[in-house]
Structures are given as structure tokens and as C-alpha cells.
Figure 1 (tube, protein in one colour):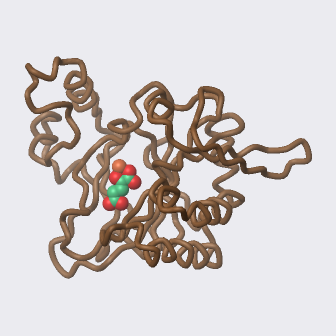
Figure 2 (cartoon, rainbow, N blue to C red):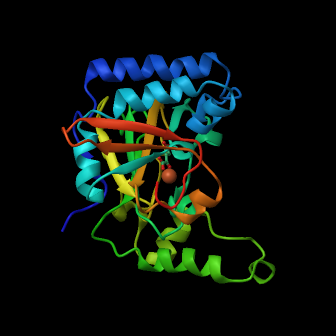
Length: 260
Ligand SMILES: O=C(O)CCC(=O)C(=O)O
Ligand SMILES: [Fe+2]
């Protein structure tokens, strides 16, 4: 049985990582982040800087992630540009700190979405990595709570659908001491932590001597199985195909449709 997240050491080599860092920095310089030093690729497109999104995808897509994505999805896949992100976490800025959650909040559950989460810095000790719940723990009660909050009428539910789980809630729902079930993989620059939308995760909480962290997220799904929610939002994609000669071909589409 495979466990989540998958860890791929050196998924992005240093020259490519340097190139990506420079490309993403252009987005910050263009001011698309609104001062938060974090942006979604869709914001680049809205700001007339689709070129930055194109170059980032073109730098990343031909690498070893291509083979992994093709294997996971059994063929052609797409980059969900509205959900590809460049993220800077500055020490002690808790407003960029995400509590434990499922990415299914954004993608629903009708289509598998896989996140390649890749840091530019060493994470998991001084700079915050991603914290997960151990794969041998049955998180069905959390999934159930999440699902139920989406089925209940909003008026009765009051608080709206469940987005995040506090550490106390997780411990109470699973009936285990939290320290026993949480873990944070240590990753070096260019290593990848790879997970689907029902793997619960959050930003690692570092209390003392926290260091800054930069990372990016490339989210992909099968070309012929894009989440309904994504299509309904009319969001852009890049299709990654393999041609008859075996080379990769990337095609931008302004709006995802059911068949890519
Ligand atoms: O980078 C982080 O701290 C959170 C990222 C996250 O939640 C994600 O990539 O899905
Ligand atoms: Fe997430």
C-alpha cells in the first residue's frame, strides 16, 4: 500500500529551480500578489502576465513530474492554473499559515486532483513544511465530518461548510493524542511532497526561530476528468499531451471544458 504524501527527492533540479524562482519573482515585482507574496497563476493572467504562468509551466512540465503524472492519471493530464500557486511564508505571519484541511474544499470529490508541493528552501525544521496525519491513521471520521457539513442545509448548519480542523478537533474526532499522529516530512529545495485532495495537511507550526519559506504548488488532474467545480468556475488550464513521437506538447485553454 502506498502512503501519502509521496516524497520525491530532487524532483526539480537546481538549474530549473533557480529558473522557476526568477520567474515567480517577476510576478511579485509585477505586483500581482497584493503585498502578500503569494499568488495563484490565475492572478497572473488577470494582471496581463500570462507569460509568467506559461514560462513557469514550461519550465516545470518537461521534468520528471511528467512521467509521474502520466502514470498516476494513465495518460494526458492538465495543469489547473487557477490552483497553481507561488507562496512565500514569512516568519510568524500567521495569516499565510493554513490550518489542517482537505484540498477537496476547492476541488470537491468527483475527480482526482494531485498537488506537487515543492519548496525552494529546506523545510521541516526551521522553515515551515507541510504537516500531515500519519497514513496508518484512519481519518474516515474527519472525512465524514467534512462531507456531512456539505450536505446539511446552510441555515441549520450555521457556520457553513467545514474548511479547517483545529488540532483539538482532530484529536477529539480521531480519539488519539495529536502529537502521536502528526508528522512533517523534511524536504530540501526541489524535493516534492505529492498528495491528493483527501490527504489532510496544513502549514507546519514553528514556535521558535522560524525561518522564511518559499514554495510552489502545481496541481494536475486527468485531461478527461476535470473537477466539475473547476469547469463551472470557468478557470484556465494547460493540457500536457504526449505526441506520437514521444515529445511533450503543452496547450493553454482559457476555460476548462469536460474533455480538457
Ligand atoms: O504551503 C502551505 O503552507 C500550505 C499549502 C497547501 O495547503 C497546499 O499546497 O495545498
Ligand atoms: Fe492545501
